[in-house]
Image (cartoon, rainbow, N blue to C red):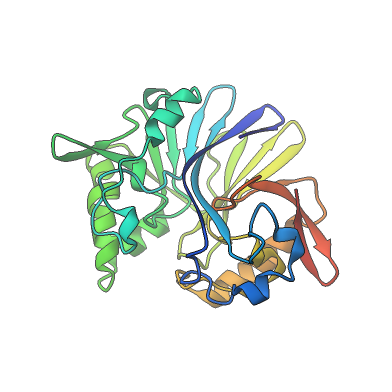
Length: 283
C-alpha cells in the first residue's frame, strides 16, 4: 500500500495483522462499545465489534532520502510479554526487498518511541550477535525517550528490548539522538505527541503544499478518534495522552492532511473530520 504526499511517497510494509485479542491494550473497547461506531467497519473492526490492528513500518521516500519509520517486532527476539512476539521467523525483510527497499538502501531509521513493536527490526541476529539490520542508516531516537528508558529500574522488559534492539545500535555508532521537534530534512519533521511515552513523537510530512502525519502511538486504534478519552494500558501518562489526542484532533480535523495510523489495519489512512461533537476518520 502506497501514498503520495507532494513529492514524497510512503509505503506500508506489514509484519503482523490481528483481529481481536487487543482488549488488554484498550480495555474500554468492548464489542458493545465498538459496534455503535459504525464507521470502524470493515477496515478497523469486524462485524462482531472485534478490533483489527496491524504492526507495520512506513518507508518514506523523498528525492534523496529513504526513511523507515518504526521497525516492528523483529525475528528471533526473546523475553517479550506477548508469547507469539517471541521467536518470530517472519518474512519482513524479504517483503521490504520485494517492495523495492532492500535493507542496504535505507539511509535513515526513525523511531517514534522505543517500545517493543517499534524497534524490533533495528537489529537482526547474526552468528549469535545482534547487529544493525540497516547497516548504512543513521538511527534517529528521541533524546528524552532514550534517557528515560535507559534509567528506568522497574521495567525488566525494557531492559531486554534495549539489550537486543537499542544498545547494539548505539554501540555500533549508528544512533543519533534527536529532539522532539527535530527537523529531519526539508520535508520531514517531528511533532511532540507526549503521553504514551515521555518522549513520544509523530512524523509530519510536508511537500508541495500537501501534508501527512504518521501517528506513532498517540492513538493505537481509530476507535480513539471517536473516543479520545480512551487510554491504553501501555500509556506512561494517560492524562497527558488524552490531552495530546484532543490537541492533535483539533489541529488536523477538517484539513486536507492525511493521517497514517501506525497500527491502523486495512486502508490505514484517511482524513480526520468532525462528526457531531466528536471526530471520525474519513477513508
